[in-house]
Structure formats: C-alpha cells, structure tokens
Length: 236
Figure 1 (cartoon, rainbow, N blue to C red):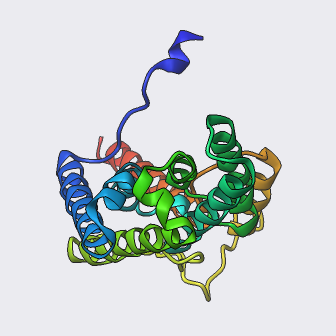
Figure 2 (tube, rainbow, N blue to C red):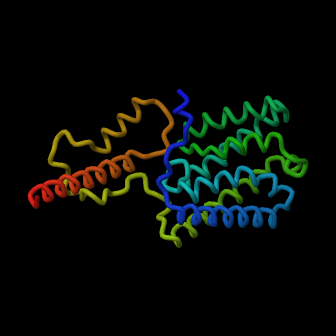
Figure 3 (cartoon, helix red, strand yellow):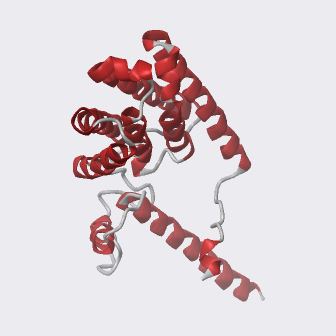
C-alpha cells in the first residue's frame, strides 16, 4: 500500500526541466505584466496563481490534452462565466466559491476543455480582491487576456525551443504510414485505444494517438533487441 505513494520515475532530462522552467517564468511574467498594464496590477496579481499553474502545463507537459489551446481558453472562459454567475446569485462566500469550481469542472468536461488551473480561477474570481469585484462582468477581460497571452507565449517559446505545440488531435503516426495499415489483424489501433480509454471511465491526460505512437515505438525497440540477440547468437 505504501509503495503506491512513491513517486514514479521521471522520463525527461534535466535540460528539458530547465527549458520548461525558463518558459514558465517568462510566460507567467509576460502574462501578468501585460494584464497589469491594461487592467491594473492589483487585478493582474490576483490572477497569478491560476496563470502560474497553467504555465506548468503549457511549458512542462505541452503534449497533454489538458495543455492544448482550447483547454486553456475554453477552461478559463467557462470558469470565469460560472464563477461570476454564482457570485451574483449566491454571494462571495467560501461555499459559493467551491460550488462554482465544481460547476466549472462539469462544464469544462462537457465542452471538452478540461484545464485544472481553471478550477483555481473559479475559486479566485468568487473570492476576489476589491479591484476585481468592482469590475463585475468586466473581470472576464483580464481573465481572457491573461489566458491568451500565456497561450501565445507557449506557442512562441515551445516552437522556438523545438517542442511542437499545439498538438493536433490526430497526429499521423511516424512509425506506420497512413497508407500502410498494420498487416496483423490483431494489431492495436487508435480506435481500439479510444474504446479502452472509454471503458476505464477515468481522466487520463493522454490521447489515443500518443498511446499508439508509444506502442509502435516500443515494438520497434523490441524488434531491434530481438534482432540483436539473434545476431549475437550467430556470432557466438
């Protein structure tokens, strides 16, 4: 039981950690600064928590489904609208803030734009600072400006540092050309993976295409290992 609490191995190199860390710092600073320049620093600094959390996703795990453009834009918009509606109807209390976060989660799932930092945004907007409260519905302005600036920062930085972003929903597989389907009828396909993920009925920040590519890469390494073992046996 206690072994389940141990952290999993990290498969990225320290150079990738540094790349993501620099991008996160620059993206957060630019988003807050630009938002503060337009709407005032008091309002912008109140949004720094959700923006910083979004930066972790967009720069460190940019291939995940939770870090794609529609996730951050749709997630922030959903959380912003829900939180302001709840604040108008139920007031700005801890209970209403938590309710707004829960409703925002359901809306994001329905709109296919699940973005965890948007849950923090819903809490933040309900329990907002006086400057943000005074803006009322205009508070959506700094929210979406911060999200858009963060997204543009990720688009520029990731691609300049040779990390392809955003990732299309259906990337063509590099291992198997689209016009050459697997000859084995028992081979796992993207459709099989979609059905398997649906059966598991859980949240997984990975696409069927990512899984298919991982399986194909693993099969390639297994074939190379098998050929190497055969050649070594013949040489012996």
